Image (cartoon, rainbow, N blue to C red):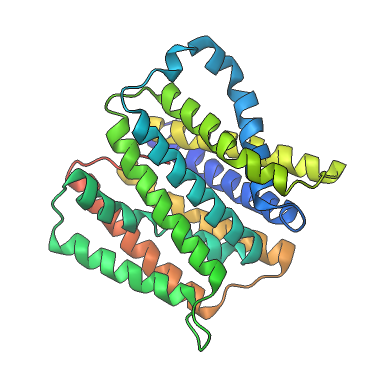
Length: 289
């Protein structure tokens, strides 16, 4: 099988896995607090990663830029809190679509942190993409949908994480990056999880285990997809997550996407895809989250 075909199929599996993870988070989040969900998710991921962490310990903790790890952990925590909260309280298609605005925020943070020069076409694509986000935020007489705002904040934080990864990957190994985020987010969530703790039922434990497994599995598939195929060809396939989320939302919750979501998501997808295309064309690499 050609490398690009393998990459495409693997990325489609990753997109399906992330959508299933979102479904499980939405189900278990109907009773359990979001901080508890994130904490348990991180613990399961650390258990899965334990053999690799043990093999590279303590070298995996050695870092030349510890403060930047703190910044990345903070941004990743905000991204999870906002994104998972939106998944629980919004239709999955809506939360997923707004989340893809992270590609637009990468442009902003690349200018601020990497001092990149952005041409008029990428600026125009970014502005148009933000218009799509505003459409999906559904402003009304009472203001914006609060959970849509959480999803937008999550997209901002995720965009920052992606740019920080660009910088940190110059000096830090992949194992070090994984170790710090896995342990760091778990520690940040420990106290809030204890304060909001509710003992999960047997069904909820199964859902939480599923969240951890699908999250890790999907991330690995995502990494291997870009290892197999060309990023410029694979990046647009990321948006199939909106299709998966829409189908799951309709079948499980009876949530049909609104007209504003369809219009806004279309605008964001095209603007984000063009932004990624321009970066690839200019031989700039967007790090995957």
